[in-house]
Length: 210
Length: 332
Image (cartoon, rainbow over all chains, first blue to last red; front, side, top):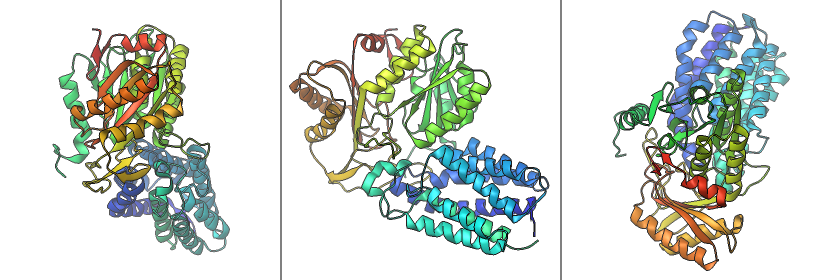
């Protein structure tokens, strides 16, 4: 089963819809331990990405993801813009000009995206950031992608949610939440929350056959 | 939420349109949302730019003009601007002598400025960056995001801008900015929260008898919540950690900056300044220069911050140098 560019575009559209629906929730999480803008900024960026999708569905997956990445860098701002933008740029660079992807290609692309985020943001596991959701999700995807892609996508989404919840009790060490010190403990991380939504969108749109 | 707003999404655009009309003699606005000194680029002059989220007015756009910034990049409220803005600003002020980016230490600001710097260098523009991280409320550590950039940024922009105006080269301007960063410390507190217009409600709830100590400039809660104290007690809570951190010691000459967070009247800021002067007197520290007022704000938040900068002859002379911007003006 291959992943077409159109299907990847649908996944981005679903993610954009869910970010829009979760806008207030993400902003509320960010109000507790950050600066109350994560939902607002992500919604602005992915609304811009959604506008590009019709023109990119027919092309290659690499162009779709790279264009999404550039748009996010140019519209989101804050830390989320460069981080999500880099994720999609690296994903797009890895996917290249293929019209239809094998599950293993997609897993390698997502790994490259994660590496880009870690290089730029310099966050490690347990710093209480989006990395805590993304690392286990990418590992789950890599483990099962070749054998059973839908099951691997489901495991990745599940792993992201577990990672997000695992760090809620921790004290943040990166990003604006880190300024609160001990007071950040017990609050769910907004970045790990939006990352979980991303892997849920991958699960729901890439997991079924064409 | 009660604010003078038409549509939250258009707020910054409409603000900039207003600034362009009000200060047409000093600045112009270029796409995508960049405040540029009216006569930029000036051939042979190092360009000095800064940027950050909106909501801190007059910083940074109000500091664009002669003897301070050449351009400023305002992002959405409390959100770092995007690299396209920093790149456009860098290109707009490049007079061939290079451009200094003054960056406040926030994860988003650092990443967006780094991306812009790469793009500008690819265009053949020489770019240096200095990160301001002066907030003593945040413990500095290799394993954290480090200290926030707060009030010291205003002083750095003034002093560095003066040197660039005099014709100092990029290496000199950068070293000077690092010297300011090495000698400046700040801390802030809040009496109320503030409302990000797109969010529509206050970022945090706080009781009438409570205050937040160790806040930044983004309406976020501080390091701890305490029972409300008197102005003198609050001044002491802010001043002592600042003095002990550098440390400022007997015989030092300082610039003392009492800043309003946006919702506190000047009346109260002078009460804080009075106590600050008394504390510094008691420690044998001389206030050589002062600044009092709302210069780096957090929307309509009530509260204040204190910044101390250790002065020498060079910094004092550059502080006194002429400046003509929408928000700071003397010597012209």
